[in-house]
Amino acid sequence: MIQLQLKQPALKFPATDPSFDSVYPDSIQVLARRHWTPLDIARLATDFLTSGNAPSRILDIGSGAGKFCIAAACFAPGHQFYGVEQRGYIIEEARLAQRKIGVANVSFIHGNFTQLDLRDYDHFYFYNAFYENLNGEGRIDHSIAYSEALYEYYVRYLHNALRSMPKGTRIATFHSLCREIPLSYDLVDSLEEGNLNLWIKTKA
Image 1 (cartoon, helix red, strand yellow):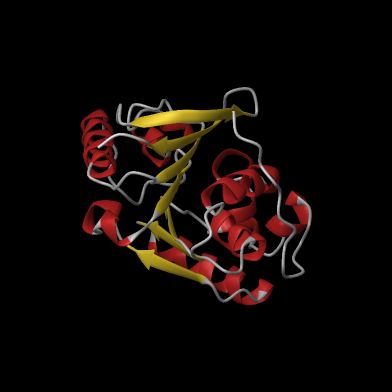
Image 2: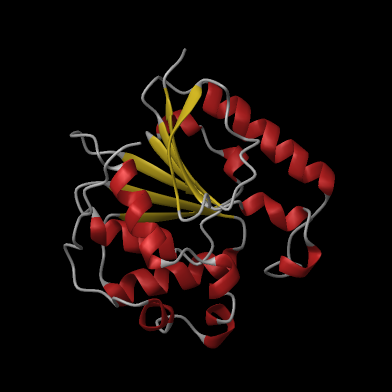
């Protein structure tokens, strides 16, 4: 088990989940409980992902309305955070929220994570964005395709991409089935009743 030294946010921002979520319109706020990362989870994951000395480039795979990236950027201003999301209108809401809170070390990318070269990033955050393909009741909307076959494809793609990353790569997974994690990664801590898992690649 690793000891997390929790960082304080460098910028002032809404300190509770309701106040943070209030920067979004109602249509986005109603999705918060199921789809957006709670601030206490964001804080733990950020501390783990940024614990190295060098500034890191951290990618949130399926970033939604950008809550994790914006909060993480406040907690760790010396690091750069990126969020990739398929839905253009949600990306626009993420950028608006970013401007309202006033944090600069965040970039949002409109697209599918399979269009990116994950080797351009150092570490990763993953709040099981693929699960929408299996659970119809939990979908954000119906603007993108869903299927069990897509779920399997995304899991295999991310698994293979993570396997090609260098030793020392970190990933924090929240509410994940962990099928995307290769055997070359060690589970170094499990928090929040096993819902937040912290992994480091230790083998080639």
